[in-house]
Image 1 (tube, rainbow, N blue to C red):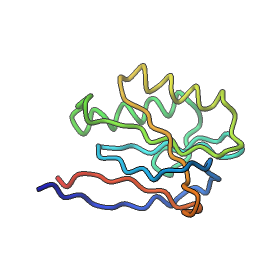
Image 2 (cartoon, helix red, strand yellow; image 1 turned 30 degrees about the horizontal axis):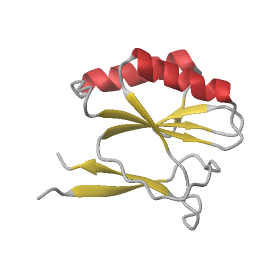
Image 3 (cartoon, rainbow, N blue to C red; image 1 turned 90 degrees about the horizontal axis):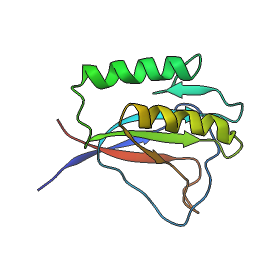
Image 4 (cartoon, rainbow, N blue to C red; image 1 turned 120 degrees about the vertical axis):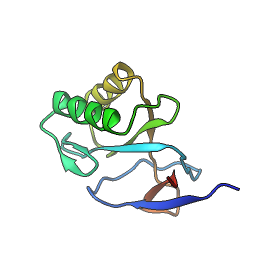
Length: 120
């Protein structure tokens, strides 16, 4: 039997694109948020740009003992953010060999998004 924690993502407010489904992710996740002004946040803390994001993400991966099959970047991107900002984050994920997943809001869920993380 598997158990998991349900973790609501609050933090930086972004307007997520709407989709028809509800998604739950099971992994060791790092949250990257891109707001409508293309500012980047790593786990709700503002970073100065892509280089700083890459450094912090790399440090976090190494501190937890990098496991490529379990590591995920959850991207919370405002619907008005530029594709250039998204491409930078995807490029960092690829360079660090980490999967990237986009969050979206379901039709009735509003701005609340969530993922699950396995208990340690």
